[in-house]
Image 1: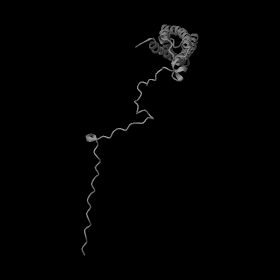
Image 2: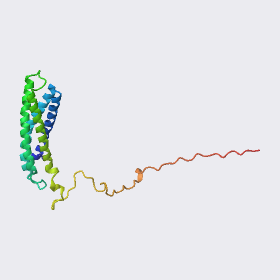
Image 3: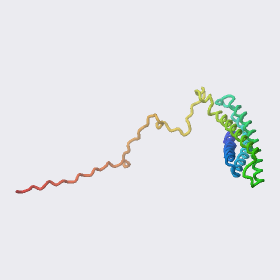
Image 4: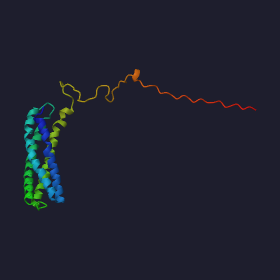
Amino acid sequence: MLDWAHIHIAVNHFPIILAVIGTAAAVLATFSPRRGTWMYAATSLTLAGLLVIPTYFTGEPAEKFLNRPWYITRGSIHDHEEAALISALLIGVVALLAAFAWRRMVRYPRETSLPGSLRTALLVGSLAATGHICYTALLGGRIVHDSTILQGPRPAGVPEQPMRGAPARGIIPGDSIVAAPPISGALAPAPAQMPAPAPTQAPASRTP
C-alpha cells in the first residue's frame, strides 16, 4: 500500500541528485567555460528547485503517518524537518538564479558563458544549497538507521520475527547440516568398471 511515507522517500532523491549534478556542472563550467555545460547546470538546478516543493510538502504528512513509532528517537524528525526548510529555501533561491541564467543564455545564443556576477552567485549558491541538502538527507537517514532504541536490546512485548528471505534452519552457516540420504535404486550411479588386465603369454621354451 502506497502511503505518504513511501511517497516522500520516493521523491526526495530527485532534488538531491539534480542539485549535486547541477553543482558539479557549474564547477566544471567555471574552470572550462562552455555554453552547453552552463545550460546543463542551469537546467539541473532549476529542476531541483521545482522538485524540492513536493519533497518538502510530503514530509509533514509522512511524519503524521508514522505517528511517532516507538523505535524513532525523540527529536530526530524535528531536526530533519528544520534542516529541510533551510534546504528548500536555499534550493529555491538557486533555482531562481538558474532559471534567470537559462533564460539569458536562450535569449543570447552567442554567449558562451555567463556574466561574472551571475556566475559567482550561481556557483556559490549551488555549493551551499547542495551541501545543506545532503546534510538534510543525512539527518533523514538517521531517523531509523541510527536510532538508539533499535541499537539496544529488544523491548519487552515485541516478538522476534525472522527476516524475509532468511534461509531455512539446517542450512544457516554455523548450524548442523543434515546429510542427504543415499541414492538407491535406478537413480543410483553404476559402479565404475575397471578394465580387465590383458592376458600375458608365457615365453616359449627353447629346445636344445
